[in-house]
Length: 73
Image (cartoon, rainbow, N blue to C red; front, side, top):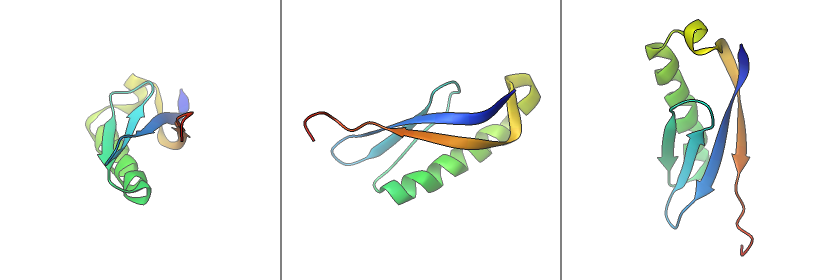
């Protein structure tokens, strides 16, 4: 059972985008702080609609965030 939900974060010109690696969760925001809040909310909504045991995720998983830094930055 997964204890961690991992997210990959990228930044476009106007938005930060977070995509879960193993689950169909995606969200975006204009600031990084807002994105963190949106990730927590998106996970909460997803977990509310799914049976955690059936999808192999612990009831209170931790969140791991990977942030892409472009080479040209």
